[in-house]
Picture 1 (spheres, rainbow, N blue to C red):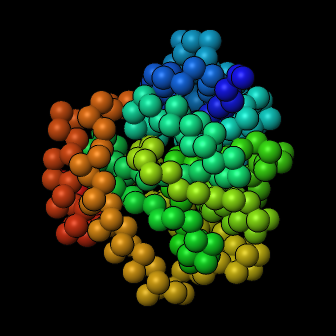
Picture 2: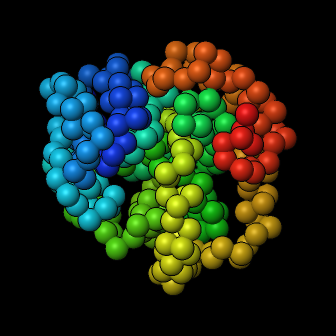
Length: 287
């Protein structure tokens, strides 16, 4: 019996600085039945040249679009996989065995439609800031805090419809997807694995689109009853404390062979950052 195809969707716009890491982390996967679908928004920074040399395993187009959600929707429509992953151009999979483990997890858990794992948050150059531990799935907790790191999530195609994302969201588009799937009774499960990196770089939308975040949060509260910023702060604080503590337990399990470029000692100072540092000014506070 043939094993399922995995489609990795990547939106990209002027992300050449990190796109090489992204491409490599997918291309080096040991699981063979993979397609990487990249929708570039008309980049002018050398991204197109990188895509031209990416090889036959990458399906891509470069054309103007209406933003990240539209790019993802185009990639989804162009994809053919049974399992869908979504990894932004500035992120990467942690090691070469990720997709093999993801497919095995789905094969062992036939009723699971969305699988997600733990994540490494890194600086722009790949220094690990902290382990973003993910809890077992809890729909009530999901309504309080978005604990699913988007690059770690994989979804069976059977529970998705085109368009995959609501293009009117420009910040909380992944959170809207999780809440919508959960609202429809989709089965989620956590994988016991560090899956991907979330790169904390200066142009990321969590630093540049805080006003959009507020507007998107209002919509999610109205549609799904999700907590607004400032609500359920005690529950959020408890979760983030647990995330720090349980994340520390995963530090010894970070792979030694990474699929992304990193400093010579990418874990230097990680125990201190994981357990004691506060998120202050970027990036000095993480050194």
